[in-house]
Length: 244
Image (cartoon, rainbow, N blue to C red; front, side, top):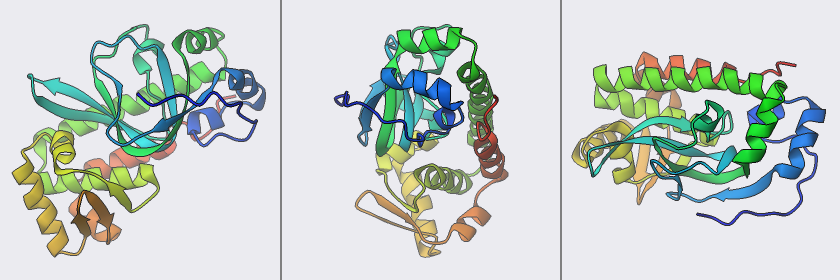
């Protein structure tokens, strides 16, 4: 796991949307407990059954939540960017993680000890109310993704995933391997390669040496299923406004 940067943070508006929605005085109270943490591509944040000793508020980049299917198979159940945080089980009263949390897009996060986090949540201030809203948002994403993985074609699911990733990375270019994509979609690499080739021939994306570039977002949206738009609406509205 990456080293935590313990340099003192300044009271600038955070890039994480949950923290940014806090009243200024509440964020100032949290600030001494927050530390900078680099999100390095493909690095593990939690393993299944790990005790969650820290929570993470991404400011850029993406963390994937994956469930194990057998000994060697993984399936993505959710992705978290600057709209949310990693460590939801402890907010819900569970000290361990059922999922593998792994960095899918490089960036940075603010982290704090779980003990400090839970102490703040017990205050019943804005943070707890924001996290309740975010919990609903993440559950909605997980539920819709499950429906999508069950009923929709691989090409539509790939288009949804690429668009969701681009939204959270705030970029049309990001790093991804075929192995990672197969885990995201729960299919073999051959199926991922076939679908990606279809999109490349249609000039919707370019994919070379583990790097994806979205060339035609409108075309990719047309190829995506309705699930993308349902998840996108929830993503945009989750903690956009302060509950204070």
